Structures are given as structure tokens and as C-alpha cells.
Image (cartoon, rainbow, N blue to C red; front, side, top):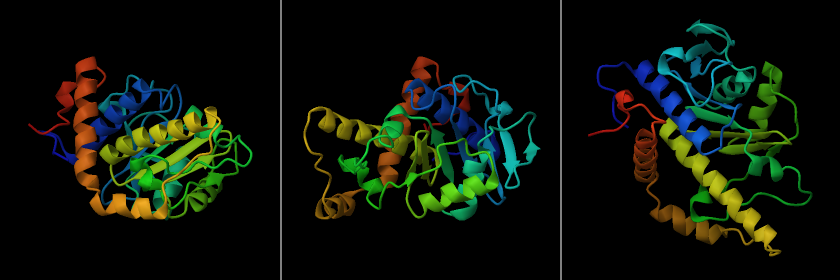
Length: 248
């Protein structure tokens, strides 16, 4: 995406963390808890919000930088108790640049139904064609070993459910993360609507997934979604215009 005029890359990332968090809170994908992290380029470190800050009111100057040992190396305050989720995921997956831990109600519901698996139903759900595993530990993921076990459950996939707890979703950037979070909830809602109608879910077939992927332009779609949600957030006052998160 665009560079942030007058600010360095870390300030840009901090503003994106705040914007994505605020927008997902507005959508009820994040509530009073849950968090987003982004990898700091060139460092074994990530940026994340302070433990006590409201998800609806994050400010870039309050974002923390935390190394992969869990130590705050820039900023004042404590990170979330479950920061190990993000640290161990990024340690295990160099391709992951941004991660979301959310207590999305729909995600939790699919971990509490016997014999029902969340499947790729809608066209944008090809992102999860490789699988949506469920991590068996329902407790808070506070310790490094727990984080490593969750990262192992995630494996090469782009999302993992957490039994009776929530989800971990990963992407290549913060704009990609919000796009995927929106589509993940849409897909889960679609399957739940099918189940509520008493029908058998009919997921995308491998052939349909292949057909969709041949025509998909992920960078363009992410840019489109980013433009839409940032502008919507600016109009509502959720995203500060002075963060300059859009080109032009």
C-alpha cells in the first residue's frame, strides 16, 4: 500500500494496527478483548497494542514493540497476556506478517458442534481451501509452549479455530488481514445460515476452487477492501484522517 507521508515505516505500521483494530471492533469481530499484531521488518519483533487500552480508541503513539522473547523494547506498558500467540506464530511462519486473535462468536460456535466442520462455502473462502483446523486447548494461550502448540495446529494454513475460545488468522499484511477477517466471518455466517435452514452444507468443490483461483487477483481485491473500509472508517470517525492510510 502507500507510504505514510512524513512518517517512518514503524509509525505507518502502528497507524495500521490502530486502524484495523478499530475497524474490526466496529464490526464486532474484535470486542473488549482480542488483538492484532504486525511483524517489524528486519527484526525478531512485533507491534501490538497495550494490554489495557480499549480496542475502540487505540492511538499509534501507544502501540508497543515487543521482541520474540516477550520483552517490550519500545513503548510504555504491558502487552496482552496472550502475546505468545503472535510471537510463536511469526517465529514458526516467516511468511506471516500480520495476525489476528479474535473471540468471534461464529468461530467459537463451530468448535462446539459435534461432527460439523467449518468449510469453504463462499467464493472468497478459497483462502481456506487447505483446511481450517481446530486447536484443542480452550484456555488462554499465555505461555510460549502453548503458543508453539497453537502454531503447530495452524501449520501451513491461514486460520485455526481455538476450541471454545476463538480463532487465529494470519496474512501477509494488515490490509490483507482485515480483508480476510471480513471474508472469514461472511463464510462462517453463510454455513451457519445453511445449517439453520436445516440443509446440508454444499462447500466449494476442488474444481470450483481451482477455477476461482485462476481468475483471482488477491492484491487488487485487498486494495479494494482497504480503500472501502478505511474510507468508511474515516467517514464514521473510527479512523483518523491524519493517519494518511490511503493514496491520493
